[in-house]
Length: 216
Image (cartoon, rainbow, N blue to C red; front, side, top):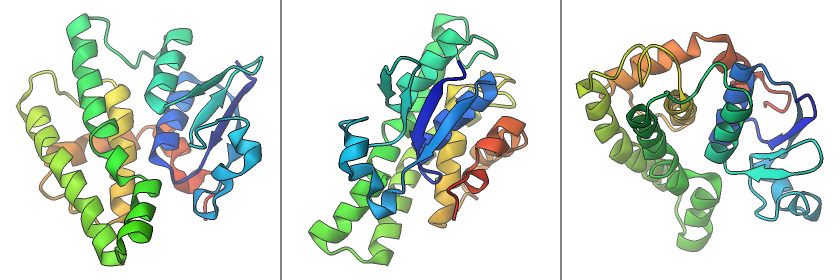
């Protein structure tokens, strides 16, 4: 699997998710950056790779394209089963996917760059408006997530037990994005504790935005 090509952006939380999974699986890949704030992902050359013009995009040996971070991560988990990113039991897998999707489907889509840019261009939002929007939707998602994690016997060192999973990958990437917008993590001690456990792991550190070749 040394011929994997990852099209991504260092600060993209969805790209960060995939980088974590690749590092956890020990899979080598070619890193191709696209500067989102400069619009490089919208250029014809990249649209020819991924018609959506979004990152991340993983190109497999032979040219097969995979997009959408959760789909990419589950693919990686199937082709490289160790270490597993989903539990073996059906209920455990459902719980991990539930936690991951609370972030990936309910928080991130309304807070990604194209939405924040549209708030400015379509509705005249200023910097403070955009920051408040971001914080609002994080809090809307983190409040129930914190309650679920705090009350569930399935929560351990990580979101589900004592090994990192798909849910932890999504959690850590979101917390990293939160820091740029000054989200107060004090109301979320369990999330903060889990994030600290994640960030102590080499795979999460190596995949972190500040450690990428295109970091600014």
